[in-house]
Amino acid sequence: MIFTTLQVALGGALGATGRYLTGIGMARLLGTGFPYATLTANIIGSFIMGVAFVFLITREAEASRWVPFVMTGILGGFTTFSAFSLDAYSLFDRGRMMAAALYVGGSVGASIAALIVGIAVAKGIAG
Image 1: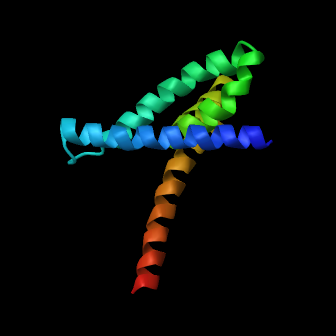
Image 2: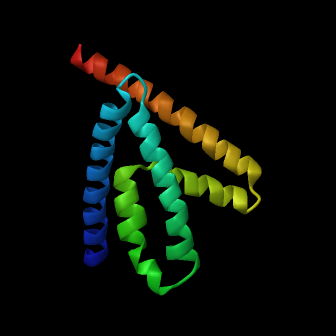
């Protein structure tokens, strides 16, 4: 358990650093008028999550020891959108179309609503 937790922590630090550097790079390359950094991190993270899914989970049991480090740690630190994408795909792949649609719509809608509520609460507290 401790080793796995350390894997996640180290991977998370690497992923968060990658996200930060992606933000700097995209701002320098394309400016800050559009959330290019977030878009880029989400797309790259989702791509890597797909590759990791195939090579770390579906193929070899030995490779699965890297799941906490790569999928939860690195990709979790880089973007949680990659996990969201995998969850949505898994529902779709199992033929649960309605569940996938509800998950996608609910995740996006509820997350934006929670952000708005959080801003309102913080503004209320801060006065």
